[in-house]
Amino acid sequence: MLIKVILVALVLFMIVNLFMAMRVMMKNDPKDGPMSKYIGRRVLTSVIIVVLILIAIGTGLISPNPRPY
Image (cartoon, one colour):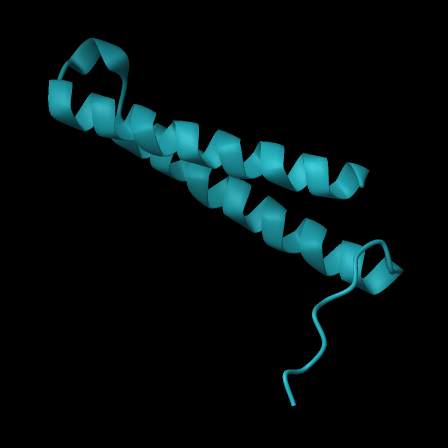
């Protein structure tokens, strides 16, 4: 259960960074920093999510859906 909460929190963090990057792109204000900072955080968060899912499946914390056939 804890791993699922962590994964949902990471997905929410990724979505927040997406909207922050959009805000920087729309404002085009050099004081806010580069948009690539937020996009980089999204990519790093995605990598962490994939690694956590693989570790959780490998250790048996979560189980994938069975095949549909």
